[in-house]
Image 1 (cartoon, helix red, strand yellow):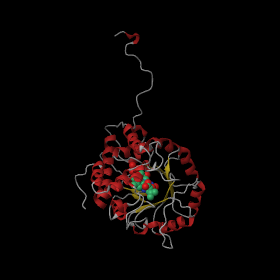
Image 2: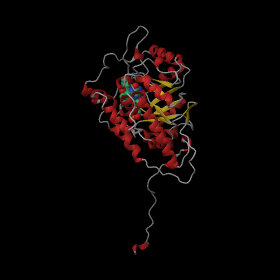
Image 3: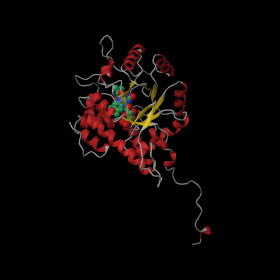
Image 4: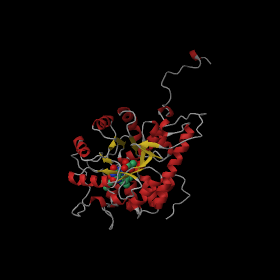
Length: 363
Ligand SMILES: Cc1cc2nc3c(=O)[nH]c(=O)nc-3n(C[C@H](O)[C@H](O)[C@H](O)COP(=O)(O)O)c2cc1C
Ligand SMILES: CC(C)CC(=O)C(=O)O
């Protein structure tokens, strides 16, 4: 289906996607844990942050490019890992990967992909997301496949010792993929399809063990506490995704944009920090980069793009955001992402005591 040119925002694409999905699949994509308060606060927190642009700064020559893990990307927006792309569109992860390659950015492929990791285009910079499995040999075998297929990094999701309670899925009775779809990378050497285990026993030593079996950079996804960020640096990880899993794990967590400044403070300058959760506008990207992110990730918008228009739909999501970032930078008086700093963020009304205009109270 060709992507619709009347889409002017991610919100338009979300609406178009709703018309193509069953209720149970739309709810699986949109939903979050518990009361979904974290889902809402990821957005609310962005909207509370006000910008204070600079003027008269010649922003006629601009770039939205960044460097992430040594690689040049044309946009600071990368694709966070999301499960089951073939639920959204028959071309699934392959369509997403092509759109990501066209945008020259990064796709983090979910361990719950409905396509074999080897079939997801080599032309795309892709990293593999992992839930560390209780069977370490299975994880190692998958890591070796990713290395052989040219994946650039591993992203270990660490916010999921158990699966969050997503009430929409329970109400809808959505527990299984429809016939013909499965987690293609969970098939072991014996040809048996395994379930993805959420292993509640993982520790920092599990991360060390993973690092010992791979030469790929290892990032951690789902860090919200600055002490964990420090610890990640000490354990030699290559980057952190500041994430609350789009509100799908622990409901009631801090919004990611509110967690970011303390984490940015805790890690060395230039340490790769990716933020995801609620990024829907170019101004959100500017807010996150100004507060210390190196890049941002988007989850649900990619699924909406896929559902609404396959590869073209994902391209529209990435292109819209890149255009909005470019315009937001210009309007902030900044010509490139790495020139953003907290100075562009309004810090609130001055807290000093107001001096009365007319001392003594006489007009
Ligand atoms: C439908 C869906 C599936 C997801 N699957 C995974 C996954 O397999 N692994 C993972 O680490 N995170 C997963 N996430 C979380 C995303 O990587 C990301 O953290 C989150 O979606 C970002 O928030 P956003 O959707 O507001 O952009 C999933 C999120 C959604 C919405
Ligand atoms: C298969 C799921 C565990 C994927 C996931 O992380 C999610 O739905 O948030």
